[in-house]
Image (cartoon, rainbow, N blue to C red; front, side, top):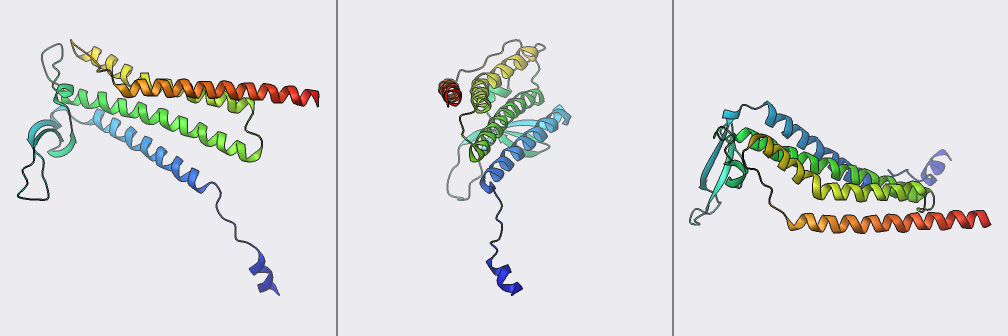
Length: 210
């Protein structure tokens, strides 16, 4: 009898498995970007070396192009644009370490903003399963997501410009079409937030009438 009852009891499955997995990925991305940023600060400036050489390919008969590669402690670190790393400072010296710090900080800002946006989206999704999505809290959260989206388009480039201005005599940040797309998306999210806000107001009016 006990076995029959146990067989009829459905096994509990973990809830929000996909959302938890996505949140875990973004948190890990933020963790690794933070780790890379701290590592770039701790590393000695002489551990970096910029090389212009061919890329290794699997086929021996295929001639690979030469590209700029950044090495750290004698090991390949990343492919780079030389104009972003061969910038002399006010004393005429090239500091590869500082250039790495600039771009690691930029990547960290991206990860932090994206993680914050994802957390808010997951909170909104979780609240929708319990009650109506048209709440004042969700409307405010959507507006915050829009602000974060605007920050995603502006903050990394602004940080890069400020950090370059501190070190280099001539600093510039190339405008990117992706930033314009991000601003447009941010404006669209802001409009959705206003629609939610209006929906909340109508719902509150209906509740008062009822």
